[in-house]
Image (cartoon, rainbow, N blue to C red):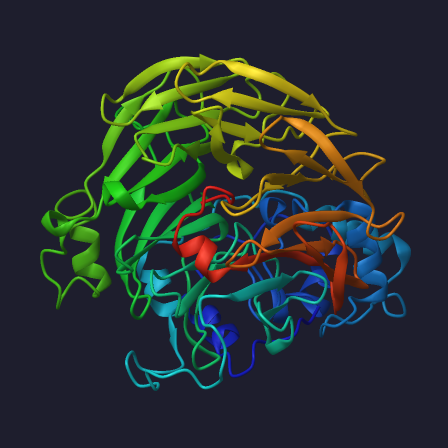
Length: 522
């Protein structure tokens, strides 16, 4: 099963060298023979991936079994994945599908040795020009992730013209992250591949596979480090942002040795630290990266044997904060003193004071609040936070002084994204997981009332609003294979233009992200 390659990417061959060796899975014939003959050359005999993505249950969460059957039979558009309907019987296709959704007999290893071997350097750090190769406001650019055919587009936020389009790894996840100057952007794929892209020169400079199943990454506020949170293996990996060389691997486990998946990891720039949530352990971690936590042996730490010896000591210490409940999704106040979090199964939220290292309040948030998409603003002289809900058609408005919910705004159905900007009085939210998925709701932040409903394309999913640097225009994704970005005047709600895109799952404005705008997630 073949997949397209990133231009100039050597990772398939390198991955074969890095792949761990473990006992073959006891798979009944003809499944083993069919997989070995048609799939293993691209996806790996151990299903860890290669030229194609990893085929493990955790990596296939977004691909339903019926869709997988269709992909194996008919291939995947805009990729090198061919169809096998003329080579395999329906029973064989079903057997192979069942196989790839089954856990392997042994969990494969992916430690610092394997991570180091996977690393690819397309351009040496500092070898590309330090002046942009094109004319534009470099802070008003958008990075648009197009999941339909696994590409990304650099879009000019002034002219709304695409500047450059390039292939990405399969199934990007967690949102791209920028260095403070906005020059470099980092992508994480579900398969654990991390890519560093130089926006000024429109080149991918480095790649590395930091995990097998990855949640997201964060870039430190000083632009020096990248941290990657993994589901499989259950680790945090800290990389040098300059060249993606591994600096430290941290096993995600509590003090009693219980392991955990990483729910999410984010940068808390004012604190000079990373914050990580553990999905299976009632803890949240703060990991400082400030001047007092430099690598002990900068010249040697890139050697994986030395890095292994430093794994539990020296730089990037862990500050454990015990919790009363599990933490999955979370958001910061603008000072980064407080963290608001919720468990996907908890039905309520909690507020943690990161300075005091303890919970200070409960949040009355039923359903499944999507705090990772929360936004903040000033309402009647006090800071408030708003969050959509993945299970219930409601927006919750939280007073960030009292931690009380001051209003619940009924929507047309469960939503995924909410966005605003400091220079607009309106907040936009979708109804992503409902029959009204084609309609956006606009809320007046001054009155907490719905003032407009917009339907860009009837019957087509509309989601993920993002604003230009000055807040004058709102860009909406039509989340379809034959989708588009629809640009609206943020004051009049009139359509300005449409840009065809292949399922643009998200777009990220350099200025809004690097300045940690209150209107966007961080």
